[in-house]
Image (cartoon, rainbow, N blue to C red; front, side, top):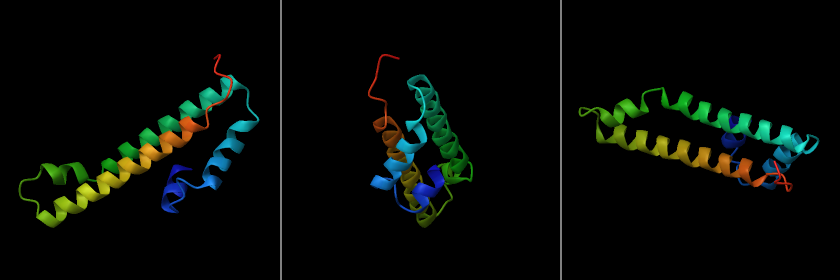
Length: 100
């Protein structure tokens, strides 16, 4: 889900919130909380997967060109922004009943 929403630049769209609400809507509050935790874990896993392709190594490489460093920083910043937006979207679809 995260990849498709980010790839289509739909993080802040009402359709994305609607999709997430529809995914959680029919579930009991406890189940919504569990699914929300699964989604948050999925976002964290996706971030770690995206970081494994060497972007961090480029930043630590003293021989890397300025272009390589700038590109890696830009890509890492994009990953951070996307992950933060997705986590906020998940949080903002919290159930109204907060007893659990």
